[in-house]
Image 1: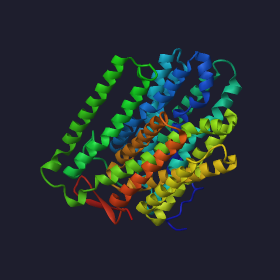
Image 2: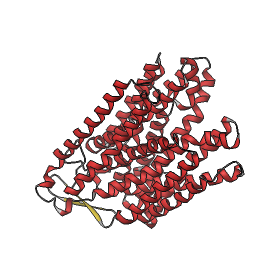
Image 3: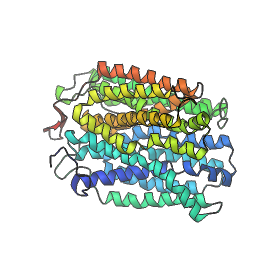
Image 4: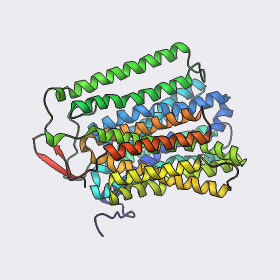
Length: 489
């Protein structure tokens, strides 16, 4: 069998690492979304208002934006084996805390902290890139991302059954606690079953920690610019929780958070300068350079692929319910057709990237999802339901394939920074979700879909003009000065 083919049924060598890593990602998403299918039970048991339920849903994604950036830095410095195990270990106790909460305030704090587990995705991207060569990395990352992301769907399908088995007003607590037990057990399984890189291979670490290394003054300024949307997304979430929207935060607290976000941004710019001030003094050796514009463009692509996926999955059940008058259960099942495509479409996007090229696959998929969302914008009650679902699945395949194509290229930019590149791209996915859902709060679903189309076309143009196909090799310098060349073509 050629090296370009993966033996999916194998559980040895690099395939063992792939399977154990997607299982870790699966479990992290299982934990991250363990509350969603149980919200009705939690609402009734705790006497929550509809507004408090919405606040919990918002809090669940708030911390994930900075968490993915932070985890990206930590995984590059300390390795995916330690970081995935630690993340799952800590998350288990946060699950226990949520399960034992006796007030809305306690629920809110635990839910906010559990947003950190959503950063687990970033860790496995670095792990898989260490074990698979360039000709296989797209498909391997697609399998990791697609199969792991199914954890949220698995939570929706299985946890309500756990509630039925236990019964009673506190049955949701046992279901949430069970996910914590699984996370705790698997944290030890992962730690004792994997290694950061193959035997004899070097795990390259950043030369400095606290911010990503860049290699030119132009890249420094672009890096500072790229941080703004992440802070802006957190400001939007604060606004949603503030007196002008949900009223959970007072005007004083809201203003304090805005000021804090501005301070965090300025601090991060200072940190970026401290790490990279040498680029203003002398040129970085050619062999160590990479182009940060590659990172910035991949961020934007993931904003429109994964960001739109999160937003659309959030609004589709109500869209089908309002458009066709189906039951809530049927609407949920129809909407699930969008997310379930991750199982095969993410690997398909990665495979496509391996076969026809990273840039061309992104152009093809961005163009395709623009057509898909354009068709979805035309859906109304005059459409046969089966046709509407078919168009939804068609669009979903292109969107989730785009997710796979993005992370087929992420590991090929700079090996020692892979975690940070993945973390930033992942954070931009959440930025996209916040942005698109904010748009939806002001416009009709039809206009919402067309806004995504406009964003996709704009980003397609940027990919066409500025993204460069990885070619040849990327270089990493060992501490003793030895240069190691890593194939990226």
